Length: 419
Image 1 (tube, helix red, strand yellow):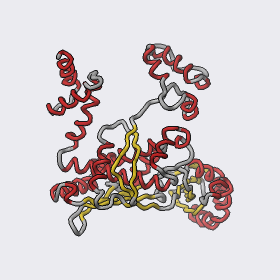
Image 2 (cartoon, rainbow, N blue to C red):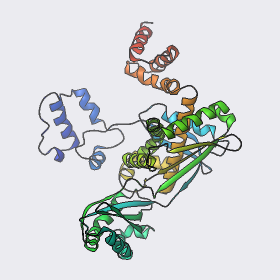
Image 3 (cartoon, rainbow, N blue to C red):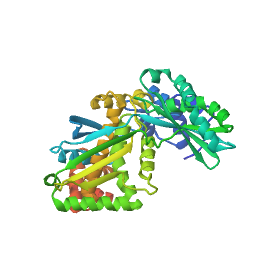
Image 4 (tube, rainbow, N blue to C red):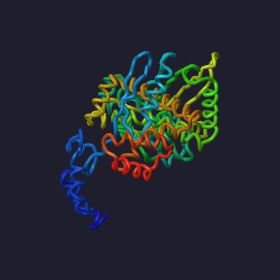
């Protein structure tokens, strides 16, 4: 910070432009910096200001379209918002290579979310656990009364689980949230039922909040890649070896699963859904056996083809939050052509499987850097100051040299401009 204090009384009450002026004064931003933040792109200041607190601007992330996808027999264009090069291209390539074998087939469980109520100071928790299970219908009545709209659309309370953790009782409310992500609905139910749970158990209620390990809201995708489409047995065997490495070693699994989430999170973000909730749930699900493992499974079928599957918790919605508030998210849903959250969830998991295929194939053949760096070279060219047609020329030179570095880009750009 150039000068000044971070204590700005009434900052939250100012307009975005007024806040920006304050920040510019304190941080020493010049007129160019102020003008940059003032341009909010395709989201107006009022919309941005209604979404989060203390808004001064927006951060635009590139939005690309993944092509070539067939999901459950339907041709599908998929918007992906990401800052990482090669992610969108990877999905396009993976999808193209399994088109002849039918693309991706998906399946989904009911959209059931979990709300947790923590009960402490329960004198006899095992005894209280049974009392709470016996009160299931009364709990259903309280929960459903908090969200009559959800009930009208076919959702609502589905079941109850009660776990004893040390001297605590943890109550799980299982709630069908239909086309919502569901956080607000289940949190409201947890708040509403907590006093009764405390009274019946003889304890006190503490935390009342959803769980992002949405393992009752699972979505699955599978696909087959024929040998002639992927480059033969050697490529297949290299990919199977890469998968075994990821499934046995958490150090490899972390990067392997991050690659899956490159695709997943890009679609989640493009549709205004909660990337952090989906990622937290996915990584927790990867550790459900007590050891952090690969989220995907790769095998060889009887004909020697490569088959892949992915199963993930997928708590995404079409109503509420940024999905409705952000105009770009609304248009992305229009491109997707989805009218139900379940279809969106299926598409996202198919993209995650495609992303994993592409990453493993690159690792098993050319290595990840060759393809990634070819795309990354454009970013380096821009960092070196290339403009217009110069970007592609400098990027090609860097790839030819096999060294994608800013200093080399600057040197080549200087030579180009001299000529």
